[in-house]
Picture (cartoon, helix red, strand yellow):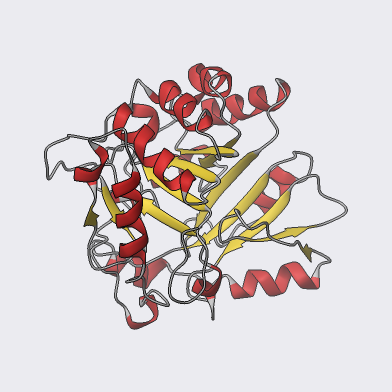
Length: 323
């Protein structure tokens, strides 16, 4: 089992397969993707070995991230290989949804269990202002079609921003009123490239948490492989509301996830000083040396991030690691 020196166990791997993104979200890549390295992303075989090594050490859930993972044409095969790995119970995908309308059935047929879509506004013009893309209608249509075909594990990720959406949260509550979808509000995090934007737009999730509790929402018990969201349910809503508050006290105490970048580097934290190069251990089908390195490197994991001190480590923007 992957366990750090603070007794935390790691059941959950966030696996980036590309750092390229075709959206220009204001909080992440407002000027669009800028290539700063050779695009020698993990191959299918390297991905298979990564997932197999983690699974042999107790990891049960893999989330495929980017950048935008759907930009890789072999995404269905990646999903399939992850799903077929002994020990992996859940394969999830985080996407901006740009081609979801034409691709979601291929993902599900490959074995995808859960799908997260980033939507920061349900107003088309505001969505376009945030992302640089006029794609909201097609994304919402694809979600409806996926629900109709029976796919039930769908979540929406919304980054809270003071001027863009925090003033009109009712649109989000309205959306989950009659849909079995979990909508999670994520506190804006400071990264290397967004300091000024963070200062203008950051909103604490605590006020929203207080509002939920005051209005009859009840916090749910979190599964051991779940992400960091506090999830709330209300008897009058089919969907749920989640809160991801990285600046909250003891946020890191329940950490259960590790990250592998699309270039084959282990990140012990989203905001660690550097990625640790483990790609050299992915060149053989025998993953034992890779597993030994994971166990050894994990002993250097810190007790917490240092976001409260304004430190974001080597993370210039979230597209580097998929959040």
